Length: 505
Image 1 (cartoon, one colour):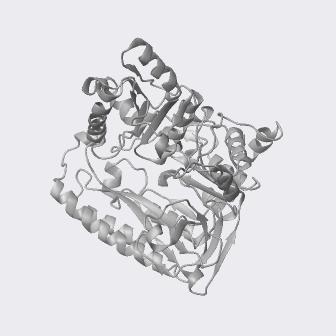
Image 2: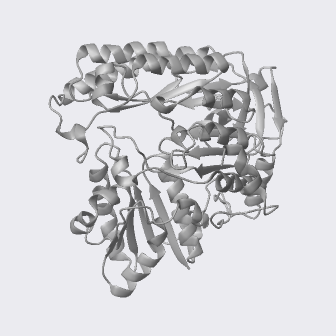
Image 3: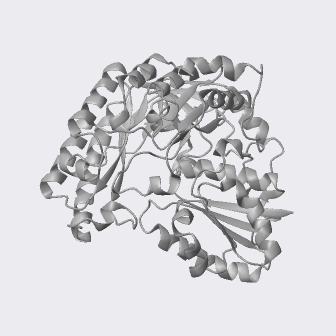
């Protein structure tokens, strides 16, 4: 039995790519070490794959550090192979093998499907294989997939990016935007629902620019509405949109389609118009706040999250004050906040007025404090509200100590909830209705079930799918869905053709 392990770094696109990598390896006869009982797990897997990110700070140092730790393991287990893929592989290419000659395979973002062949070629030729394509070889959704969840799934609607943000290297590594046809997307979602999935997240570098390749600027809103017609699909999310291309028809589609959730991740990056211009972000703070106002006008319960960068080259104290002002006005429920650091290959890397680390750190800490105050106030405002929570297998690190379970509310807030004594515990994939008893800065607590308040469980097909998978599972192992072939079709052959006109195609 050949075994593998995939180690993922970075964004949700990488997580989805790792599902494809797992599916490819299992189709080639490998077994995930995590699917084996502890007593059956080998000391080292036959293949370790690093799916890398080039956006995070010090991503290359972390990769080479991890590879260094793995070298003695490989030396002790002849025949073990190491592969490196993802954005950092696309960027560094042959440099990885030069710095870590014990790596067997390097593959890029455009040829994930080549991994099994490259592993076999490296084994046969007894030398490293480096294959980096400059453009997409095959759309990722045509590849086999091993999903992590029985009840929730990622669906890629586009890959690549046509924007030219000066701090971002993604367009250079993922290429220009390529869109899937809507009929293919809807057919994949229908197939997932047939397998028990009740929640999907639509993925793209800029999801709301979906349709640019086939000339329909309203295609994304139409796609959201078409998702509302899929029976059994309870929750639809998407990430990430771009403020410059975010139009009112998308807001209307969100508000008018019941299974599209009232949650929105809208990257701000900076509140200063000068910094936004330097970043080549084609919107300004007033437009950004106007979008949020219109979203909340149509969906008062919406929770809005964001991305923020502190210390961009040339950022003054006045610029930073503008970011703090916009953060307070925007009332984000949470924010992913980053300190700017140089990314070789980006225009910002060579800009003048790079800020000292101490200045960036001090501003970063101030921003965290302000955002935590805002998040806490927003979460406290939810206290007393009944929320529906899609139960997860283990989102709460302290659930065992607190005897709570966890999951995501419709607005995507993390909720830790108590189950009344004598009540059957809900399964992952089921939905509970609880009342929020406390809003913490980074999550909600719902102890209403043990305080005499609201508590109910609705068993779902997602819970059924999760439970069916766990039958006869080895002790300590959470089983994952079986590998699915790419671009599945179910039901009537005409499903995709019937659905496509809803998206204007």
